Image (cartoon, rainbow, N blue to C red; front, side, top):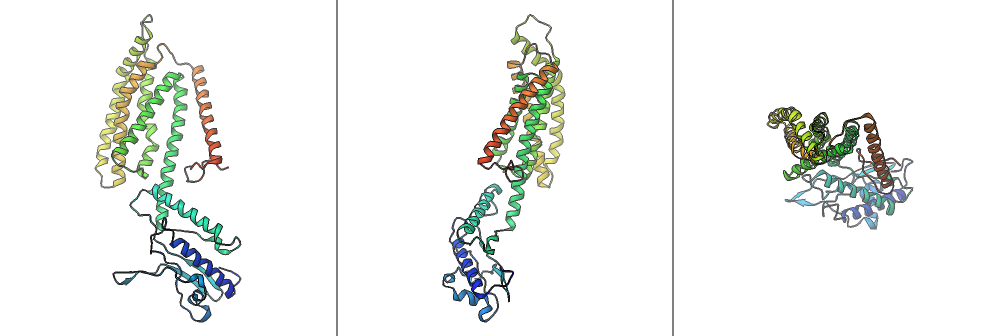
Length: 364
């Protein structure tokens, strides 16, 4: 731990700090299972150069956690140290965490952050600022799996939000009417909420497959709705003296009549193609097939019912698309998104908002 070669007193100081760290970690019942701590191994050696000899000389190193016996057998020692003539080079403590591998990776990630916070607390309160042990860290093979899952899900959720922003901008440009834009946004949002609710009712965790599927959820959901709105724009009532309510309902019915068959056929094709995928032996493929089946079914039913009802209720009666209004609505929606982004930037400056990589959303 000292590249210049420590004296024995320097080594004793380091071992004394290690003993204190060991006891504090072993007594932290929130993070460590009682009786599972394995801290300072007794390295082979004799005289004053052996680690065991140094430990025996220090009062604070007495009553350290000892190895346990299970079924009359000694639990294997997982604590290791590297001791040379120049001193103690490195040491590895071993603890059994309260995290169990069957729990959600997001719950396990909270435990990981608690470990990180406690290690930082030990650095600030126990270890001197200029001491080499300021480089201590905690690690586990399980954490790598947890972090990969959390980053994958966070990235997918971030891409879902980003695709939603892009989608509402594109819809604003292509429709050019706030009522039609509102119809599409409400329909897409309803589809996404319903699909996620079905995930919850089925008892599915938000894992990697679900996260990747969510990233394409918006794109596959907007397809049917936008086609229905396009059919509404192409439909024009010839009864100009009729009431606006009648014209809205006539245009909505005409859109379903002319476009409904094609989008329904497209949805049925996707659903039928997803069914064989649900029967595969490869679980991620089977889960992806189920998600596609659920998403497509919800999207087409929701579009032809709620989407059509919204067009007949709030759709513009006599609106015809124009480039001017498309650009105006596009700029207005872009300005609203910019304001939301600015608010998130301000919040992130004081409260950490995780980004797709697990770090801060904005690099202040």
